[in-house]
Length: 296
Image (cartoon, rainbow, N blue to C red; front, top):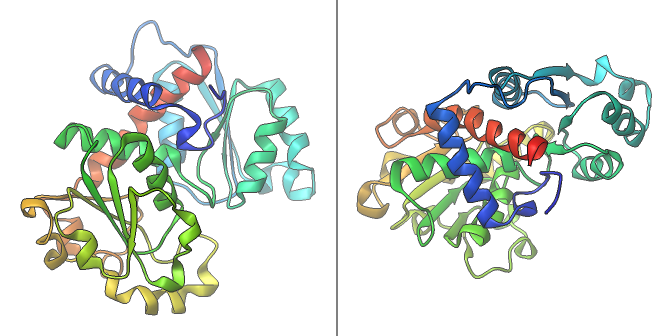
């Protein structure tokens, strides 16, 4: 078992299911006594903006008795050219775990290889495994196990979508990805559980869960006009949701959302949307992850 959490499949399904169950325990008892992470320190090194990831990790450590240190690039020697491996070595001497949020997945891998404490992927170009843990917990709370269900991903193939590909293999559900062929590389998915289509209606028909993300992820702003043109037919609308399994599919979005672009206000603010539960569950799943990495 990996001591890092860089990809969702760094842990096997049994371990991930245990973490989801432990997350529910933390949801019922947010501040256990004695606090399991008393005296532990988490460093958060973020080169990209964050709301949910940053606050959830801060709160998770505080509620479990630990403490956190946040470093933006301009507050560290990385901004002055220190090799990322050197930063990893130094921080490992000071703290018990590190969350790294960076656009470069290669930098994340180099950092984790040099670190001697657990490293958590707080988001990279290749994936957002912490978000998937929250999504899987949210679906389980509302609908039960996701195994055997159908998930429709509508829109850009973002880092969250890439983590959904890992989740489909781990939990054995069908993932239908509806995106323009200009944004899809068939080499991204060879598993038969992952199906690509250009037609969002085909992806949504009979689905138990519909998920989307912003059309212009961080770092892709220079391509915004092209992406909005390509993805304009991929907005999640009430009409699309009406095609889902018994018209009762859940809607998820990792947030922040742009109403009127990737999703209509009627959907994200509607009765099938569970985005606020999904956001809250970042706190509970990250508690379980921290406990597992620091104490297991």
